[in-house]
Image 1 (cartoon, rainbow over the protein chains, first blue to last red):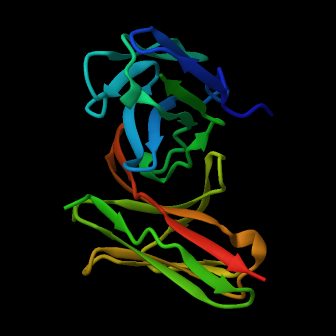
Image 2: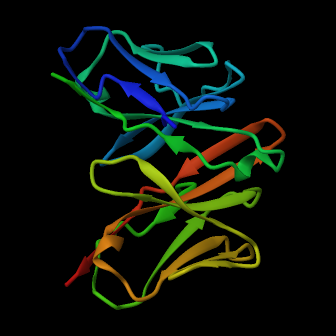
Image 3: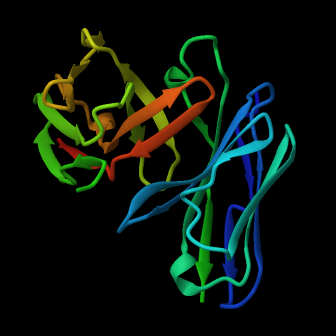
Amino acid sequence: DAGVIQSPRHEVTEMGQEVTLRCKPISGHDYLFWYRQTMMRGLELLIYFNNNVPIDDSGMPEDRFSAKMPNASFSTLKIQPSEPRDSAVYFCASSARTGLSVGHNEQFFGPGTRLTVL
Amino acid sequence: RKEVEQDPGPFNVPEGATVAFNCTYSNSASQSFFWYRQDCRKEPKLLMSVYSSGNEDGRFTAQLNRASQYISLLIRDSKLSDSATYLCVVNIGSGGYQKVTFGTGTKLQVIP
């Protein structure tokens, strides 16, 4: 089975440019998470969706960041305009509610997108 | 105070040694706890959940202390392949809502 798919795997762009990161969750999973990882701050939850609806976006750093999930098999994270401090690895993860408390559900991570903003 | 705190390490231990990591959390409403493992330049992967009664999976033992608000991970008979960063995860969730917080990780290096 295919795991979580992210594209691109690497992105190098210049300050001020728009960046779009893409994620395809595991089929049948109804939760999708976007994370950002840096050496200084570790892994930070940016936003998560349940059944394509954004539930908590309190981790989105500022208005330059936006995320969408138009259907169950696709999500995007957009940064416009990008800044050097946005350089990080961005992970997408998905999970499925199993009937237990949702907090027990394993999150499956994609390979990440390594973003460098010059 | 950070919601989830871990000693960043690195912990350098010889093969065969026993090593333990702790992770403290600040929110007493936290409901579920996990350890994830992350290899260098790879994505995190679930290592094990942490149950109130403690649980064991082979050489790995996880424990939860709600009174003191910490979880621990014990690795016995360390292998070279155990070298990785271990992330503590705390979840506050009910119904369809969950707030997931990762610690910054503890780096383990097992030395031949």
